[in-house]
Image (cartoon, rainbow, N blue to C red; front, side):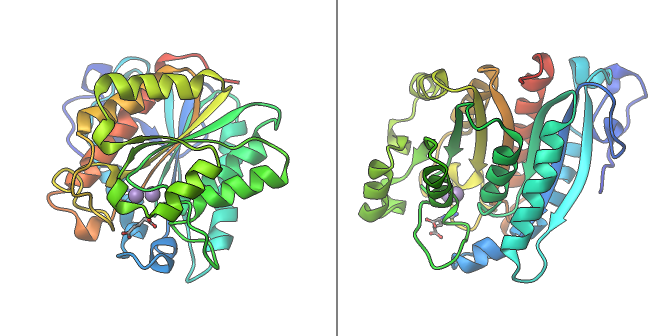
Length: 313
Ligand SMILES: N=CN[C@@H](CCC(=O)O)C(=O)O
Ligand SMILES: [Mn+2]
Ligand SMILES: [Mn+2]
């Protein structure tokens, strides 16, 4: 765990993440952070590996960011639970371990938000396992994905391209609805078969070319309206390649970062956000840590919003 950086002083007015993140279990209200060091999903999906180094790069980018309000004065703690590491090709074992750690984090008294630092988008299946193990099944959960891709691939084995089809099938097997929304879909990066699968599953989506501040805010509000709990998953390839070069599949167009910030804030602003992950950061491909920095910024925005709110049950 590397939490180091600039120090301007000890008081809350100088607070930065590296000064306040702790590894011991907090007694009161807190945000939990957990890394998923995994390359195996992207490797299986024929992508460019390196996402296993994502959690460390996101922590480095968060380290010197300023903390305000209840986070800055330590009233709301940030608890770093370390990393779940995928050993060799055992992605499934890693996802089960991640799910167990997430469920424990979500079930701790005072947990305001749990944030997972990926890993490729296979991280999302571990996130789902954790949410499903922690949550009363009658509660209405929704999965909101900010992504250029549906990741609804039907493949021989799980990968970074399959997590949301895995969720759809698990929900169907349990007799539960699957509420899945995606903001930022690129027509050119998803085949007709994937659009047809999305339609057959009743997926709500907003195309990249149709995203404006108003439409993104409306989409998130409408998606969350009928839900009790929200899980937000952010694939950094939803951003333009100039903003997020450090991903396996950079976007030719992508969403303006202000729109992605607006979507994250809208999701956190519903008061229903319990779990978030940021995925697909590949530090080997990054330029000046640009991708890590915008990923950290999105985490920081969600964490700040969660710290301002009462815990969601
Ligand atoms: N998580 C990755 N999803 C994309 C990758 C596409 C690509 O590599 O070009 C997908 O499988 O569709
Ligand atoms: Mn993607
Ligand atoms: Mn994805």
